[in-house]
Image (cartoon, rainbow, N blue to C red; front, side, top):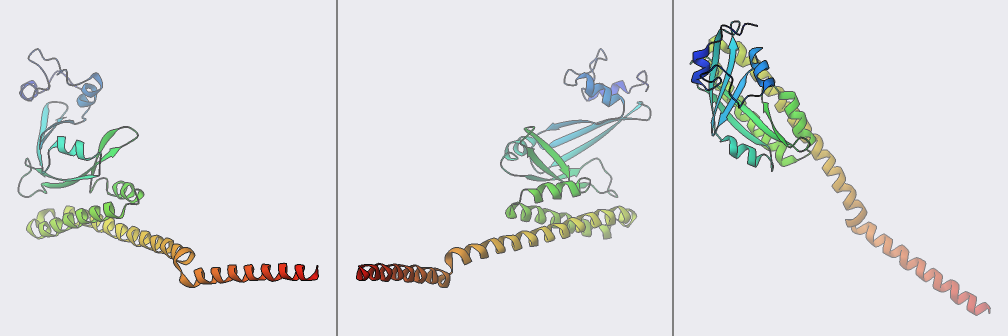
Length: 234
């Protein structure tokens, strides 16, 4: 790891290091060490996001600018009530590259932190988390977002044949998750139908209700007859 050839001008430009070449106080010691080892620094502001990564043996700074359709403050607040879905556009990429991503932000009650999931990179994990909530409405929201992403990818595959392989791989992942959601939704409906059927059979079935009343009346009449018989024998 070479720290003597850092791109200081670029790092100063983005406020990662100060004029005296010390790192910004916004970064802790662990952040700095990871950054020097190739990890990415992420900076969020309103609807904008910038990522910074050292490359080429720490001699170059790779900067990516992103734009979301929702502000980070809106996402953090609303994620406490339900999952937040957002579209992210990479404004740094060229025309022949995919510049669109879809993210989900989920509030973790145990850690009280909001966790970000990419629809492609974290597809299986994201589907499992949403399915575990057993919330039909949320599952449908997730499916709609998957369908939007699929529509976008289908539209782009014809426009950019040079990256068709990458798009096809992403389409395969999205289609797989849509099928998983359909299967989960079907199972949940069957369970719900079975539960409702049990309730109707035990409580709302008029024949069962009337039969129970009839048995109760018959038992009462039988008891009265027995009592009369006893009195008569006396």
